[in-house]
Length: 112
Image (tube, rainbow, N blue to C red; front, top):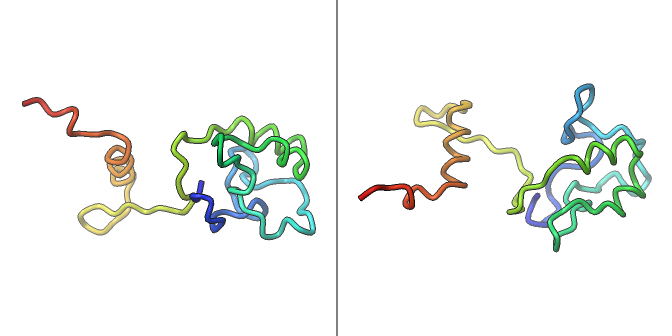
């Protein structure tokens, strides 16, 4: 998530977890937690959630939701991305094409 530059989403106050009724952490914020980023609760070596840290700062309900959230094997920035199409508009289709270009090597798929 953020190449460990610590400039991504805050743990508290921003919607980043997958839960039907509330996408924000429900645990009350700690005194030192105001500036904590989501990237600070990810183990940068193993590219997985730092369960020890998460368990110490968040409620069991939040921990349960977070640890069920898979992380991509290639960890990149947790910034908001808007892929524009040729008309300068953001669409589901343009986002799909951006993702496909990033994760699929089309050169390998070409038939000669």
